[in-house]
Length: 491
Ligand code: C2O
Ligand code: CU
Image (cartoon, rainbow, N blue to C red; front, top):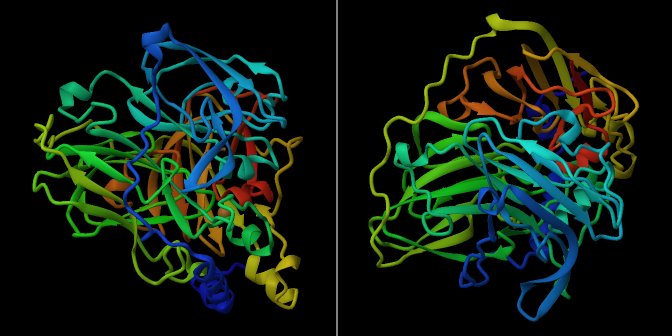
């Protein structure tokens, strides 16, 4: 029996309400300060250093809450990592050194590279070792990211701070008239949520609730800071939004409800800027938006009740039923660099399934309510049932695809909404619950939030063998760890 999302939400209502209470009780909330300056990660412009980039995976200490430093992980930094700019056409020699006392991998999320440099769970970098993949950059401009992928430790390592952004530059920003001055009018915004213990440390726990719903914190952090403030020029500013949370969707809007324009999704630019006042961003998704600060007024970015997740029944990250501030923007008096909204961005052909050579179905099932009922409501007895009834097995190849072909993948969520991600390929959304996607979801993507069912047209053009297959999985990291993941080869 398949539970629809609606059924599921009703069935789990009581459960959701009690977890909300837990959140609310321990929330320190984001109304806290709104005074920390927005940290801007260091920019590594690969081309400016001979296309050789070193990353050191390390542990460190980071202060989220004043006076209470906590142990964290980062890439060549105490937390998060540099933003790496990579240029189309270049070959980047990466050196990743693992200075942690545990095994890790580095996956280049959204980067189209062969399976043997993708950094999936097979490509372990043991403590003290180095990994040196050469990344051939050949895809349109986009905002990507990198993060660990060792099976059974991905969720914890990302929660501890391992995540970094990649700006893939194809040299067309200037021609398109887009804001492009890093740290000034082109800002990386890495959105996450955390819960803090009273000593300021970040709790990562996988109790029953966290396994079922994913680890959710009660406090939103941006680039590792709670409720920071960004100073921006009084013109158009480009925000590169990345949801690097383990499980949380962010429902974004501005406090004055201003209209902003979405210009890019995971895989690159949309044909034209799409006007919006709200934007849902699910784990691992990226959107680039242009915001006009010409009126000089301060404004907050807020995250609100989560309408996508029946389970958490319309709650903001801090457990409240209203929007909470994520960060604040204040304008400077400097002259803005860009003031005019571009009209056209890229040509995008219509996505048609005529070209597809095959059709497959993937039922993503976290089995929660069904099992919960059977188990007499005991969350510890919940079984996660995997994709098409199978939990992840590193020894099993689930799907074989062919290089240069396209397939239609229908993804069905049984129960709660799952952000579904495919490695090594980009896709276009053909339909969402039977209807065409809204304009901001109609471009190239690599993650899609599946509430009921979606049809994707997936283009396979990077090779992956049995030794280094590509993954597809739910990007709620606790679901991925629990086995909502499969592997495919592309030959
Ligand atoms: Cu963000 Cu398997 O990836
Ligand atoms: Cu999931």
